Length: 250
Image 1 (cartoon, rainbow, N blue to C red):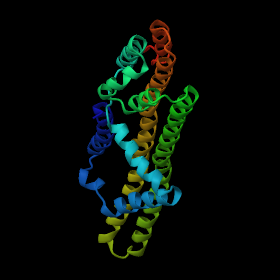
Image 2 (cartoon, rainbow, N blue to C red):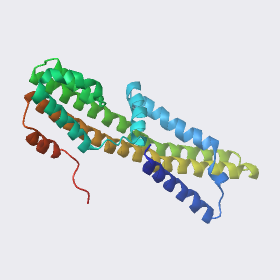
Image 3 (cartoon, one colour):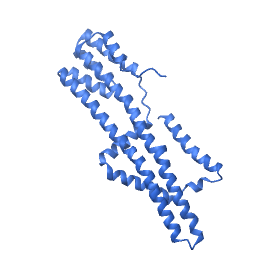
Image 4 (cartoon, rainbow, N blue to C red):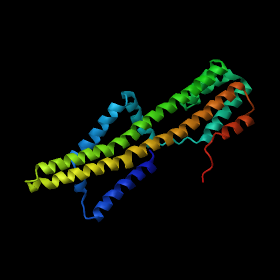
């Protein structure tokens, strides 16, 4: 679980709630079922119209990536690849078959199996880089779902505001209903703008950032596998794989 992401969400939401208290409001003022149904139901409907079902499912999986916390350092992956290279150079490519059961990364395991099975180097390279490209495109489409939801939500919030004002005007002769209508109108706007800027758009960017790390790891694996297949010098392969690692922090 990515607790830094959760902390960020809590900071954003709590800032709005605390600010509301400072202005003399209460949490109850921000809870409007009608506004919630209008904004989130309308946004979800717009997303369903815009994207195929497969993209929406991938977006849900992408949210798991955003909230997940896969922490497998790249340096450890490089060391694992180099150990496999040393085994292959000392005992031959077929000796790697006994090492497959110890490999935990599914992408590395799949690529290593192709090497053991004797696939042509060109086929191995095309296959693993095509898989990386497909994964990157899938992630971008998943992130686009949340990004689009962030674009729809404020507009749907405005629709909710207009509906609330219509309700006010229809019941202007009954003062007891005016307050509810105005509250729904403004809360719908808060839901739309707030969900877009605190949830949907940030999630889209978070998915892309997390996927960037995974794709970099996949490229390290790809070059490592090609190096193992060629049986190149471990020192050269280390230098090559180190060049793919994330840059030094500022």
